[in-house]
Image (tube, rainbow, N blue to C red):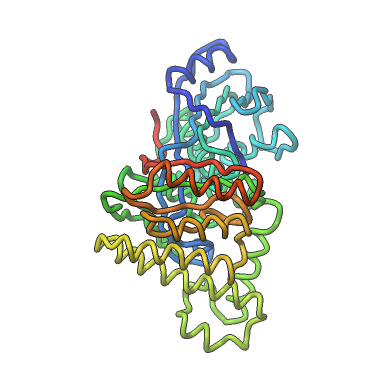
Length: 388
């Protein structure tokens, strides 16, 4: 995954940094947020439904065109410029590997009938924390897409921009993600959750009840989607669907799945059971949110984590410990891992009774057990990808 440092720059500061690096001001600055996966773990690529929140942290990109066909990529994280020629993008490795996300966007544009900019200078900055499963990859993909489209005077609809980002990650970066990350980053609104029916896809929003807040506990444990664990779960889900004679697991109800258990290899059945029951939890969560029942919402969040822990097996002892602590903490409605899993972060949905001192107590207990403190990050729900 692609991650930047913690220090956000204002538009003016980023423009000044751009001028310092490239000797001129940018013509366009764009920003796309990271996201919290609220509920719907690994349901998206199975044709299901998911709820997410665009957060008030993200990736900002500044660009300006060049006439010489050179493509310069610079990030405030590496402080090095990667110079590449125009033409068909080629995957990069080592310190330049972060450029695969904007390069993947360039490679995706022709698939949507859109023009590709030739030469340009490109600067990216982020205030997303590292390894927290907040989807910095989708954020840089969407911010890059808006920047490249702006350079070429194109303005496709928001859904197309989202699909460009997903295509970049699937086909160029090589992560078989669904549309959750890009969809939430693209369709986010302040004070609302994004509901995605991934079979469409169809994007709508659901109001977030007043008085609730998000807390992210970032463990800094390994979060290795590209390393194969995510892809392995994807294959197991596809194998279960094939064994059950459906295109996607969303076509099965929990009862129908249980009746067909003998047809599926045990590990694949566990993955399928998680997905099918998680889709049902998403639907129940939407109803609870609309009713303002945060207690019911919290129970569904914690149930989602237990399913990830025992059925999908994409949790870790560190994440389980945090969920145990948070689920028992006063003022917390519920908690679960957020993102692809296999490390990363836990999200807690809390009320007024849970604040900085309560979060500190959880962090201290974690440090006493594991010898390292998690980052504690209160999060707000911010707007989706935009040109600044």
